[in-house]
Image 1 (cartoon, rainbow, N blue to C red):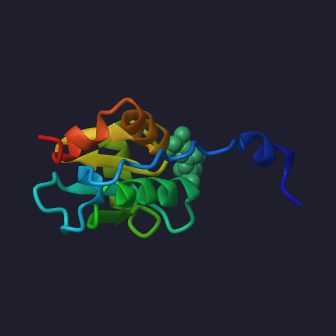
Image 2 (cartoon, protein in one colour):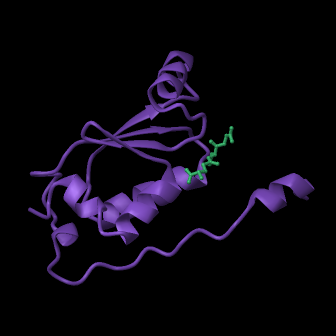
Image 3 (cartoon, protein in one colour):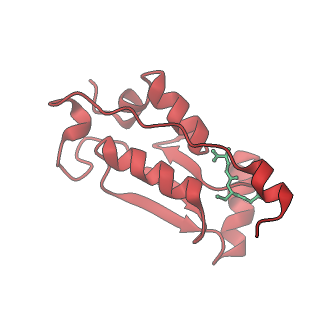
Length: 120
Ligand SMILES: N[C@@H](CCC(=O)N[C@@H](CS)C(=O)NCC(=O)O)C(=O)O
């Protein structure tokens, strides 16, 4: 049985819109020509899984993952860099995108592929 607070905190995750066939996110190349993606995560983290699934769907095959549950110093570094305490925290190149919700919003606004660097 979940505590009431845990149930209230739950909300449905946004659906990921499919890309049109032939669009850059369908590329099978290994992050070729893309900005590097770095993600602060923990082992148990549905939002991290969702973010990884979206990035994968957009053609990202390599993510530098930093497990803050395994490294307290990296957790401190994440908070220092982002001002946030939740995971995931996602960086594309030098840009801090934010969490999973921010990534989905960026994608829906058409900003993810240009930031990844495949929509030139
Ligand atoms: N809105 C955030 C939610 C992230 C979130 O709640 N992550 C959980 C793990 S799945 C977390 O970091 N919980 C620890 C806390 O809230 O301090 C996002 O989309 O990334």
